[in-house]
Length: 132
Image: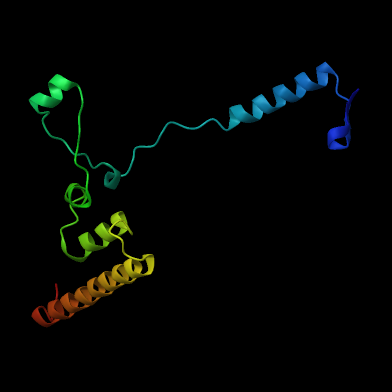
């Protein structure tokens, strides 16, 4: 018997009981092993590829300028409000803006994009009053 007064409890386990519990937990763990990794959805399959410069090849170092513009280009956000929203989120307060100001600007861009979608839908209904 082991006295664990530090935890105000007493533990009385034989080696056989401990081994039995270990085997029990191993069996539980075996049932929960991760399955084969699923193929990632297409929207996760974005890659930026370019040739290495001679300097990068000789130095063995690849240095990329990864800024919001490059990321928006790689993700093909298409400019406009979507790119503005993404840039604001990525930069957050790095430019010295207050967090509330950044959030307000993101909300303004979202609101304008929603307005544009509604405008385009109305225009489409006027141009095509009898869609096929």
